[in-house]
Image 1 (cartoon, one colour):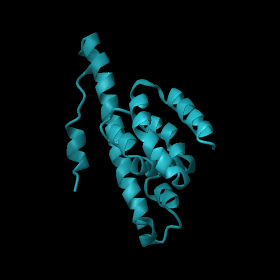
Image 2 (cartoon, rainbow, N blue to C red):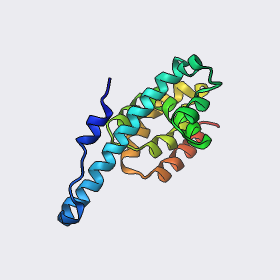
Image 3 (cartoon, one colour):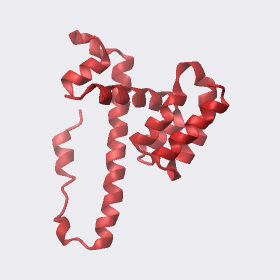
Image 4 (cartoon, one colour):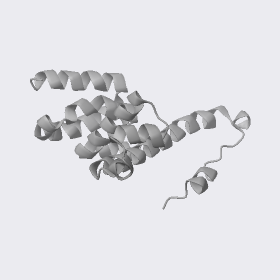
Length: 155
C-alpha cells in the first residue's frame, strides 16, 4: 500500500521566496511533471477500478457515482476522469507518455476521442503518432490534430 502521507512529506517545498529565479522556473516545470505523473497513476488505478467494476461492491450505480461520493468530485470531472482513464488503458503509447509525465491529463483528454471501441484498431496505429505529437503540442493543438484525424478517418 502506498503511504500517501509519507510521500507528501517528502515533497516539502523550500521557502520559494528565497529561491533564485532559475530554480523557481525549473521547479515549476518539474513539479508540473510530478503532478502529471501522479494524475497518470490515479488514471491507471481508476481504469482498473472501472474494469473490475469495483464500484458495484457498495451499491453505487456507476463508477462516476462512486467517484462523486467517495472522492467528492462533481459530475463533469468524474466523466472526464473515466474517459481519460479508459483512453490511457486503450492507447499504449499515449498511456506510457502520460505515466512518464511527458504529456498531461489534458493532452490525453484531447486524444481520448480517438480511443472508442469502434475505432480501436485504427486508433492503435495512430497512437504512437499522437503520443509523439503531444510532447511538443499544447492540449488545444492536440485536440485539433485528433479532430482532423477523426475527419480523415471518416468520423
